[in-house]
Length: 312
Image (cartoon, rainbow, N blue to C red; front, side, top):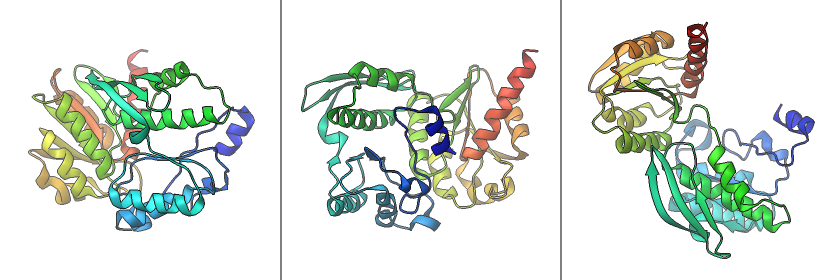
């Protein structure tokens, strides 16, 4: 569908996100100008393998002979696998951590701000993503590296266009704020890597405030590890489930992960769980809907409908 849509729209550039893994992904029929590999962590182990080496080998399947790869900072074992595959295919490797100097980094209202200098050209980029979370700096550096690579190949992409694109990017369901008083956030932190980033965000921005977590998960996820990372930051955890057959039931989640929570309740219906949190939370509290992208999508749709009804 994406191939057809982009072709009909005659886009100048199409960015394709690889699905599960990479080696066997449908996007491998493409001949890209550049490939980007973000930070690799454990996820979908039943399909990709139970070690970072095995997972990295699957991710490296998107590399194409001679096509440059932008490689985000990685753990040593994952980096070695990617570099070996890139060498075998003759892929130039661009590592943002090595070509950019980050200066004057700060956080404003949960979003990162930084002045970044490209070492080779001394070009300065003022990085100011609207997306919350310090991890967005790494994502932004990947983007800058890819865009600069395209510039070297004759495409006209100004520095202002790069920084404006980063500043105006929208990512539904990724630390997306829906409401204030109480604050309501959506974040599809469904694996340990994403849970760590959400935990950092909670620690940095919500210390001293009561946090409610509405949590759900699918059967192939590392529930105990994710819960261990997130639940210590929450005063109340509500276990629920999205309407999908792969979801773990709310009751099962409570059995598996309830010991990580200071207090928890079980409300199987996700919309009821959301309404319960909204009714019980004080204006200064924060509600985070997390653990499953399916839960995030379902309650995001519910919130939109709820807001439409309220304005009639």
